[in-house]
Length: 226
Ligand code: DX5
Ligand code: ZN
Image 1 (spheres, rainbow, N blue to C red):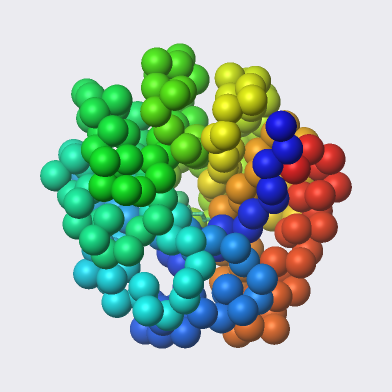
Image 2 (image 1 turned 90 degrees about the vertical axis):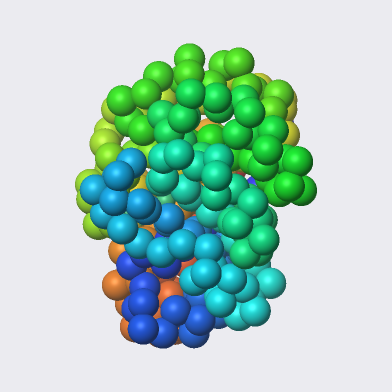
């Protein structure tokens, strides 16, 4: 099954003093989704923003809010992120003992359920929830910070995740170190959603963002899969 290629810029690398404009600019530049990196200073060694900021951003675009929760525990906060306007809520498999319950809670809130795996976590951690999720997010860096280098061993993991998905309607997203050089590797392995933070937001404004989104999309299409 061929899933559509989607670009999901991470606002972690955006100008936090002008986030509303940064979100609408990146969507005007052609991005389909907006990636929201939520960090708690506990599950990852950095703190970013929470549901109040996402709620304030919601009126700035109709684009899909792709929310990546790097928090533990996640369960007590799922309803708050749903109410804030997230469309997809992704939890880490490492963040709690009851992954199946977390995914069911997200779907019960009327949102799409995603699961993310740190580079060190094997795919076997999610084999039991393949019919309970809408998205798999493969971390291609250790989460916590933007601007890190893609871990090459993740290409093979993406290919294995793609095989595990088979014909199920599950998006396969990759996050960390995505550039024009690494985009074709991940789409070649079967990924269809590319998160890019620093690659996009290192530019200044909508014209720069459009150039980078186009470059990433062309490079990704060169990977041949999506
Ligand atoms: C890392 C975050 C990523 C990050 C990606 O913990 O989950 O979404 O912002 O940034 P780049 O594209 O700069 O690697
Ligand atoms: Zn992320």
